[in-house]
Length: 328
Ligand code: G3H
Ligand code: 13P
Ligand code: NA
Ligand code: ZN
Image (spheres, helix red, strand yellow):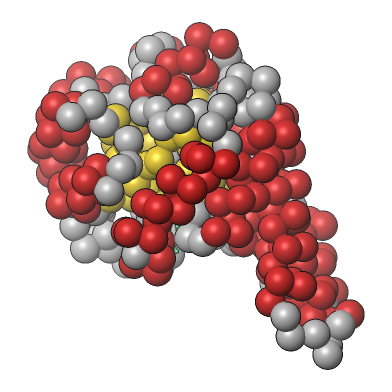
């Protein structure tokens, strides 16, 4: 059954758990997420980026989600637009059955340039007003995703902005967060704490210097009833890096967000945890392994099925770790 982000996260807050939000582009990801949800009895957030909507097409995505709903009727599903860049993206998502949208006004519409606070409030407020008319939820973002190691802020395409930014320019300001939520009425707030998208988040296992979990605590103190969202929250597991590299891949040494740090965040108001990279890595490592071990094989099902199972395993692990399990 389709639910809104607000419904899902209110339940999560009441019961003290977090919900992974997995990115979807295709059927294999959808089936992996839903089978893991069924096995662990977890509610799910499935999110599509603008790139995903372009890749699969809105009609295919909408029908895919309908199919997943029919296969798993007892699992609550929130379908969420990831990183909407303008009101039109958000509204067309709602037209296609999305029950929640992210208006990412932390960047300009080009998704490349950091935006002013006033632009962010204006564009986000416009979306919350319209989305709430039709019962959809809205996630906003304040602060700048990017690395505290290099000071590089991150645009949507993964490229850094010109010049290094100071710590307080990158991180979400807790007092500003309070004002932002009051002005925009967002249902959930994405914050910047030193994470970035993709596999290359940290050059070493992150400590408080480069992963600012204390900012989450400060925001939660000021906004105890606002659902906090962590982006760039893949853990980039070492075993998946090793598998990719063992079978012909080339990933340099890197560290993601440790699961135990996310669990700590969940104790301080984090309710939605965005994960894409970990599933990409599980699929890629598995497919590389099949190709390496069976170079004569050319039936896609022979590698897509194990890839699906590897993604499902990661999904189930996060449902268990975040306390989502048992709450469907
Ligand atoms: O925001 C980043 C997500 O991992 C989605 O990535 O824009 O390549 O689909 P994408
Ligand atoms: P990862 O790249 O860490 O999986 O983050 C995904 C994300 O934040 C999508 O919005
Ligand atoms: Na999002
Ligand atoms: Zn993100």
